[in-house]
Amino acid sequence: MHDTLHSIRPWRQIDRRKSRRIMVGDVPVGGDAPISVQTMTNTLTTDVPATIAQVQAAAEAGADIVRVSVPDEASSKALREIVRESPVPLVADIHFHYRRGIEAAEAGAACLRINPGNIGSPDRVKEVIQAARDHQCSIRIGVNAGSLEKHLLEKYGEPTPDAMIESGLDHIRILQDNDFHEFKISCKASDVFMAAAAYQGLAEATDAPIHLGITEAGGLTSGTIKSAIGLGNLLWMGIGDTVRVSLSADPVEEVKVGYEILKSLGLRHRGVNIISCPSCARQGFDVIKTVEKLETRLEHIKTPMSLSIIGCVVNGPGEALMTDVGFTGGGNGSGMVYLAGKQSHKMSNDQMIDHIVEQVEKRAAEIEAEGAQAAAE
Image (cartoon, rainbow, N blue to C red; front, top):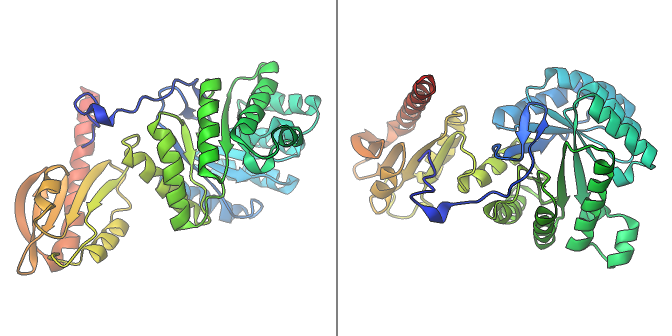
């Protein structure tokens, strides 16, 4: 289950678009680097303890990169402290104020999220690019359907994929004219069709790494679905080097959803992938409550592995064959535990949760030891 076995199962093959590789701090983005997961803090940046706590929680959930908004000078000062405590590279979100971009680079941001077109004259843009260069800072060009340049809106009549692509290529030209190439680009829209079309056009027009996102996607349920459709389709096409799921929810939820999208496509593996049935009258135990408890109890496991929790023997044994640990509901208040795809032993329903957690932890330790041994050899 850890190897996606593309050569054996060609229908699972995703051919990633060839892009240049850049660095966001110590995280590679693009080329053949793993697709990184991002989120953004929603605390006041000037509330340093709250922002640091949120960055750390996001990193613990698996975020590779975290973005922090830098709207004023006080936030630039706070950023310096936040960078010092952050376990992951930070992207400074800059809008309109070119000074904030320079301050953020000086404060230790790993990347600046800017629109070169909306931070002033060419000379000011030059200054920001110079600051990024001086402090080994990459840049993300952030095109957004909701804030396109006036001349493009006049030209196209409304936000369109072509308008977004043109905006992105104009911004790329500004950086390239200044001999700056450590950049990635996004072209986000809240409309899934527009975002997907713009990203496809951009993917053909540039070899820059692409930051994927559906902006203002909505609340936890609707935003997750919208992001899974939009990002899932693009990732399936091989487009995208780093992702951010935008939800009106805790940033930790964004990270979880981002990982789940990547896991479902076999593009990234982290933690326990629980395969469970929706439950029905055939179930031998309460599947829904059990899965809910296991999700919480297994959050600490970082090792990529699979667990099947199936209510009865219709699909249970078949699913268990394909997972590291499995539990299938049976009769008389007990079910069958499977280890490495084989029937192992019976376990009573009232002790199953603790027992499954124990088995998963044991298997995770084995997988880690096998990995360490292979690396040593």
